[in-house]
Image 1 (cartoon, rainbow, N blue to C red):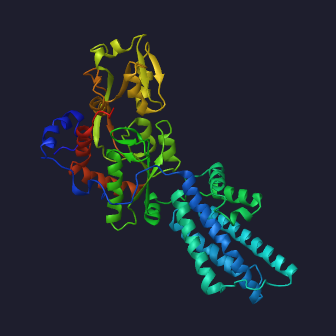
Image 2 (cartoon, rainbow, N blue to C red):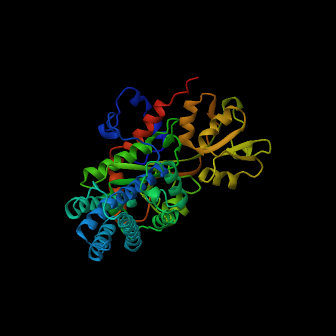
Image 3 (cartoon, rainbow, N blue to C red):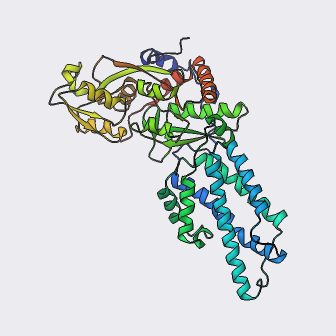
Length: 452
């Protein structure tokens, strides 16, 4: 079977779907009992996880100070710090982090730990000794294993999440939102906390394989806009639904099934205007959600074999009949063309409409309600979205039989030969099984008008 189905061909299969003759592979969706959620990553929440690890490290310093006080050892243990930094350098490389900024970050934490211990020792000297009942756990057998565990945890969190909160403002927000829980961090001088935020933001990925980072962190980072049904759409409860959300989950399951430590998808919010820059900046490993292959994207990023082909067309109120049957009829001064910003829809409108009034609607999901409310007359979008929205909104119709700017959709990836090989191989198998086409057919078949 030819995997490059057009929407028109797909629509011919609705009858067989309705009768149950066609069905998706069993693992097309995850077990409904799974606790995995498909929602956008919250940068403040992920930043808080890293701050918790810093706080946990500092919380151990009273025990370290007491153990050194009782043993008479100095606060500074140069050999131990050198060994830790060597360990950090080796692990950072495995996690795909640049080793020098990672080493500087941990060196800062160790300096703050020394200063913490010195403050405790100074207080105990003034008091005439260690207060009675102060616990002093064994440094080697009890405390250091905990510190080593926190080090490994921090490296994993940094490799997995640092792109989410690569801004000191986000880190400050996370700290202020959880200040009462970060009891050790709150004891640091503000200047020290600011130094921590700056060092965290300075962390960067090493020029290593994205596939390597996915293996070590167990997380596939996928950028989606969440505003383009049937590919990806954010629901009112914050969850994400759509054909590409299912494809992303299937890809993660494939990675896990091939011996990689994959299986988790972390959905990163992006926008059509910033989609390519966000990918190139390393905010996510790949972009999904109905991404059209365009010359500018193709020049900077990699794509899988395409899973859908179609083109632009018009959607308008059915009552307007054939008023917009051609581009010339649609491009009139009295016509208000609605467009979502930053993507191929806006690019087409700006290039082809010269007389009509162009109205930008920031949220693509609001365009169809605006058409129904007569806040606009026409929208230009891909034929697959028109097919879905006209089923959801019976008062809206495809306004022309014409198809403009034929295009294809695929998964867009960072250029990384190892990642490309794995993902392209997976997509070829999905196409051979007709999974993308069947998912689209299912989405269109299940589209229903909203409940009043």
